[in-house]
Length: 129
Image (cartoon, rainbow, N blue to C red; front, side, top):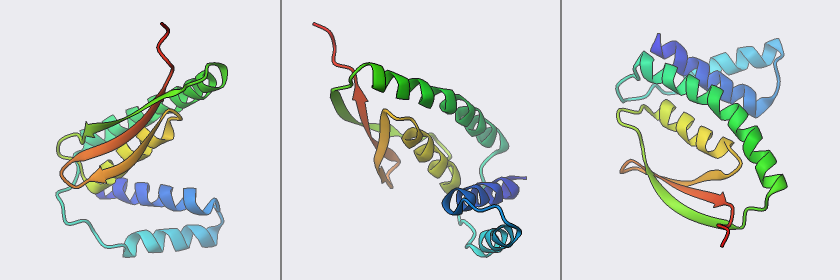
């Protein structure tokens, strides 16, 4: 089951990059996803993937809300923080975490540290005095 989720993640990335859903592109995408090297880490657990899916569903309306906030209220403060990677994350789930952080308009991952940290840039509203 997990290998199907990894394949689905790779295909999703392929379709996001190409924006083409023709039969030829689907065949090319599946071929590339099958030929890509397999990860050498342990497979993710199904509950981790389900949790990630819920986070994706939450991030979509959150991104719209943050975009509206930025348009209505200027965000002039910014900071860079270090966030710990969740335990037992496969490379696919780490990529999904980075994608979700960057998907919302107020945050972006600047760097992933191999020791298990994300360097995250955030903008925020200036605190009223």
